[in-house]
Length: 404
Image (cartoon, rainbow, N blue to C red; front, side, top):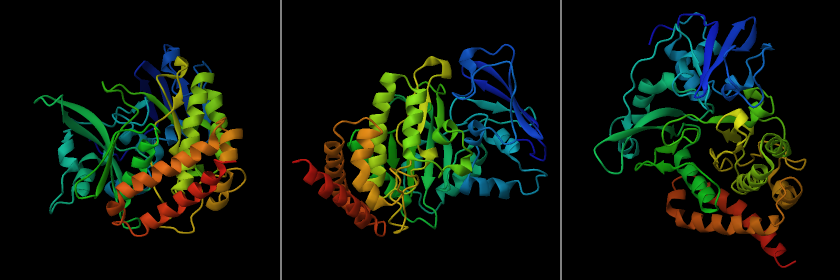
């Protein structure tokens, strides 16, 4: 890759449906659709095709979604410490070309990318031995990872056999490791995501490495053939900056689902959304913020937007016992109160008529899965106790309600 000691003033935005336009930073941020761009090449549900230029003093939320955070941002800054300006445009130029989240790719002629060697999935899942595998992956794939979140995570091209034959297909995987602040986080996420899968919430395919040091999840914004799908998180769709991901409420997300989805898709998506919010509350997930929910679609004018599969479900209360919900729900962020109000949220906000029965079902399934992984859960301090506490609260509250 060429040296990043550059000021990137212009990025060309493309989509699987063709050229979209230009993102320019000149004091303010401007996005202009190309004169030949088609409706199918619109970049966002919030930015329809038009001749007039879009202008903002801040980077548009859609592009903020692709800025690295936390561990990745720190590693990029360390690697390019001598760069004259390590600004958002440069970060997008580095990470927004081949593996951007969603369907919009950003290109700068000053930044050239080379060939990438995929990693066999079996290598990612195997015990790492004496090598720090995640550190090695960071050195190889740092500049392709424009993914948010404070947890150490990378976007890695993976080589996988095609139906057991010698030929291989390349897929995209998100590889996460535990940071010093949150020990056992891969195990934590594996158990919580297993519960989500068991209760019927759509989830991407995911794995836990043999040494329990890495949680690996397949990207859901790519088709099996590798085509990019549109994805916008709820910080984008509520027109908030990425730093404001803890602002707003779960009711606002439900309203956004109704605004951007067809009636049929909205009903199905709100039912799934209710399950996700309820499960996050039950499992003590205090990080279910705006960026952890989003809509998936072919392109904005296709009319097929629907709630994306669930991701990033973890128990945070085992690390932060006093943690609270990431957003407001029915006027509160306190877990205990939210658990008591969850049925009302389901019925009045999400339109789920059998919310109380569903909440008891979620608790029953969660308890079964936790029992299945009881030994694994013991590897993470206070994880089993924290999960059991939330599950029992739901079971006791809504188990009693079943007979009313």
